[in-house]
Length: 397
Ligand SMILES: Cc1ncc(COP(=O)(O)O)c(C=O)c1O
Figure (cartoon, rainbow, N blue to C red):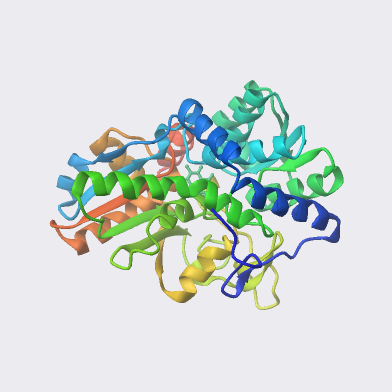
């Protein structure tokens, strides 16, 4: 765990937030700096990750998928088996603990797919904290199971109807709430985005994925995988997975971003392919924007990837070429969603289905003697209704 000096990853990152938040961000930075070296905090975090989340998550060999694709041996890092069904809880637990150390009794979150909202509502209930979740009205509809679960857990959902009524607007509203209530409230940012120190905190809390996966794989195969793949929305499961392998030059790293319906502005969320440098939600990163610097609405069939920005560390990793980011269309993701369900008996989240699609191409290129790990970021229960509706409409067959 730790900071680079000023919260920059190469030219990206930093803190570009309204003045009203400066004090809260500085307090958070100082607290986290202390806690990241504090044995009691580390022990407490490890306790909850083991006993509440169920870590370590397994690294499973996907025998049928390996045979079906006919390329590299496929391994799955099973974040879908975490309590509440995705990687998001690794970060929510850590930040709720930090909030408790700071004496904050109220936590708020933004959510797209509902998994971060669900994780925050879960830890809010477990720690007895007042919890408010901002969710775009469109996402409340398409991720209705998660929205219902969040309310069942005692958290309040505030649907956001402005703009596209998806993740960007939910994030903006959560920031606004935080600015107004900073003395009592901690904003649990759900991805590796936002002003410093959030991208670093979220990466550190999610790095448990990559650190575990590397150790588990080495134990099993006595070597390193040839490649790893993860999907990229804001970029938290991926940066957590990548963090374990970035220094291993022999390991190829791939990110899967949402190619949506096509390459036209407004049809995709492929920030790393089409984005230009700009500022969004307090950080300098790659953003989908028009020639006047106006943010162009994002689109993805998966609510968790439907965001016009990306975590600044990914922008840096893309610029330096350490990670290769590939686009996956809605249609390709839907077909991987069905394929993985039928071949492997695992219904992946629609977000994760994007990673499977890239993994299939990479596995075929690598050939049979190599190994590839996919970060299975979450389970797809939340997506079943929406996928059946889309298939029923015949849009994506
Ligand atoms: C299962 C799952 N995977 C991936 C994502 C994308 O987020 P991130 O890029 O922060 O991992 C989400 C977002 O909601 C998600 O629910």
